[in-house]
Length: 282
Ligand code: SAM
Image (tube, rainbow, N blue to C red; front, side):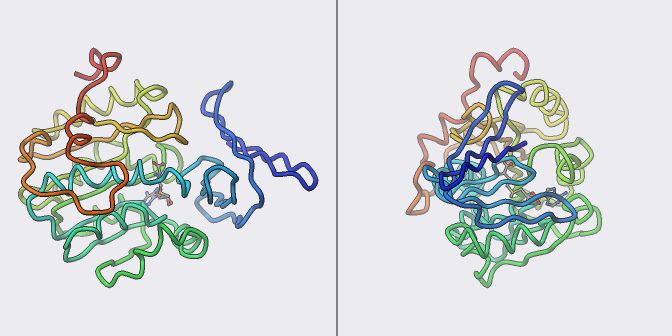
């Protein structure tokens, strides 16, 4: 939830509460874009410290300054662990950040399934550093519910990335057991799924519940972690799921150039389970 207090002539204060008594705030020079779609409220602010900030229903999705932490950690562990990822599926990800990271590899095609066309349009118009990848001829953008798309499509993929918002509203279905069971059927042999899983500090119960069914569905079901300064708790959890690829097996290729956070040392360290989560998850 966000409240914007605009003091005349001064920057507005944009707040996102992470709990009833704590959260994050930005001083924003101006509101660049705002619209109510059938799915959510989209806002883009120009902030002093984080550049452009995209909020959906008042929750920070991405900021120009720190988005690389999240998009690199969502995408590269799976793309690096797979020997030759060619067909990619991204569910959600309408801001274009995950797609930009996928196109650092010689993939044949990336299909992006985003439920809200207005998010893609807002990214194109107001977040050029993320949305440039929408012009890549290898992308196919489908405006659809990712859960429905999976049910109706029979295509298979080397890598599936679930870049959904938090488990509320249209995104709730993308965090459930049935969705992951159907996702598994959409993997090619040797395929890998990576998804954003939530805040290790604030969403532990959700992570434990999810881990219980993911471990039953996949031979390799591992959480991994990375910093996300503007997300609740400042660190984020991701899941790596595969029936044939162990994420900690030796990686036989170099990371693509130009990355700002991910590298092979980070890859190994990211899969170390913090002590406070070990009991409930391991
Ligand atoms: N990095 C962000 C995070 O971790 O919360 C997610 C960013 S991305 C903008 C999330 C996208 O998922 C949004 O554009 C939203 O419209 C989309 N989305 C939500 N539910 C969806 C669904 N059922 N199918 C496809 N896209 C969905």
